[in-house]
Image (tube, rainbow over all chains, first blue to last red; front, side, top):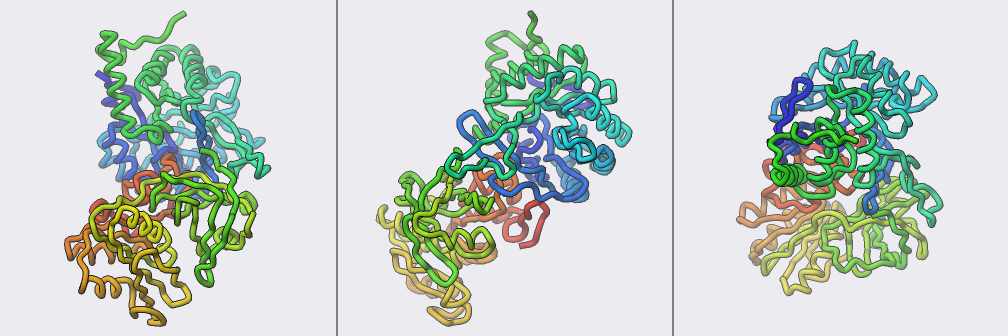
Length: 301
Length: 254
C-alpha cells in the first residue's frame, strides 16, 4: 500500500531517515531500518574528519528545533567502511549524504563514497563554498549547478541535491540542477535561524546561527516542494523533507508534490516515528479509499 | 527546552579536585541517573552532568579539562545555564540493593541512595578511587571505601569492596557508575551471583536530545535510550566497554 519506486530504488514505504539524524554509524542506520524506515540517509560526510562546532549545538523550544552541529564526521575513509556495513545489513536502500567546501571536494567525496555502493548519493549543498563568497552552494543556480556537474562526473550512481528554502527561487535552482545531471531533488534543508539568551547576552548556539527543523518549518517545506514540483514537471522524484511528524503531515507533503518523505526531527519527538507515521498514513488512505501512494494526487488550483 | 539561567547557591568541596554545586532550582520529578546539559557562555561550551540531587538541584564536578575547571571555580552567586533533566535514569527495584561507584561516578549513586531510603529500600554503597584524596563523601546509606593504593578503606578496586559485602549480604540489584571498564567488571561480578545491574553510560554528547546520534554505543543512544542501561542490554553490544567516539565521530578505543 505504501511502496514507492524511484531512481532505481524500491521503498516499502515513502519514509526516509533524513541526513544528519541518527545516521552517523552503520548500527544506527540499521536501527532506523529496523524501526520501519523505507530508506535511510547517512550523516553528511566530508573528505577529512571534522569535529564540528562546540556545544550548545542543538536546542529546542516547542515546535522549533535549532541546531548547528557543524557537520562533524569521521571523514570519507571511515565512512566508506560504515556505509558498506549499512548497505549489507539495512535491508532498505541506503542513501549516502556528502558534503564539501569546494566544488572539487564534492567530486572527490562522491567518487570515494561510491565504493560503498549506496543506492543514491545526496549532495548536502547547504554548506558554505569557501572558494566563493562563503555563501551556500544551494543559494544560487550557478553554484548549485557547478557542484551537481562535478558530482555527476564523479559517480555513476543516482544523485539527489538537497536544497535550502532560504532562497527566492528554489524551483529554478531545482530544475537547473536536474538539467546539470541530478536525478532527484531533496528539499528542504533546515531554515536559517538563531536564538539569543538575554541574560547571557549572546546567541545560544556556539556557532551563533543554526538551522531550524521540526514542526515549525512544515509550511515552508510544503511551499518549497510545491514550487519545485511545478518547476521540474511531473516525472522528477522529490524527497520532501521538513517538519513531518505525523502521517497526515506525510500525506500533505506528497500532495505538495513529494515522491518520498524525509523524516528528521520527528524521530526525537515521538517514539517509533516510522511505524507510527506509516500507520497513520494507512489509516488516512483507507478512509479515502486510496490503494497506493500514487492515489494521493498533487493538489491543483 | 532552551538553556535556563540558574544561580550557584552553595559550593561544597568533596576533595582536592571535585566540588558539588547547589543550584537555585528544583526538579522534584527528576530521578537519579538523569542528566543536565550545563552551559557556561563565558567558556563557550556546554557539557552533560549527572544530577547529584534534584531538590534543590546539585551537580558534582571533577576538574578535568578547561570547562570542568571553570565550573569548579565558580563562586556563590555566579550563573550557569541548564537544560534538562534528560535521559532515562535508574529504576529502583528490589528490597536490598548495592551501589558501586568509581571516582566522581559515585555522585549520582548518592542521589540514588537518598531516593532508595524514601522508598524504604535498603542500600549499601561501595565508593572507590585510586587514592584517598580522590574519594567522595559518603552516601546517606552505609558506605564502604576502597582505594587502589590502599591509602584508605579496603585495598584494591571496587571489586574488592563487592567481594567483602557479598560475604555477608544478599542483594537484589546492583547499580553502578564510573569508568566503563569498571562498570563492566562490576556487572560481570554481579552476574556470577545472578544479580542484574543497571549502569550509567557516558559518551561524547552533542545535542543531548536524541537528534544527532553522536552519543551512540552500538545502536543505542546514550542521551535518550540511556544513560541508564541494564547490563543485559549491553552485554552483546559491540561497542560497550570497547569503543567511543571523539568529537568528529571517529571510533576511539576505551
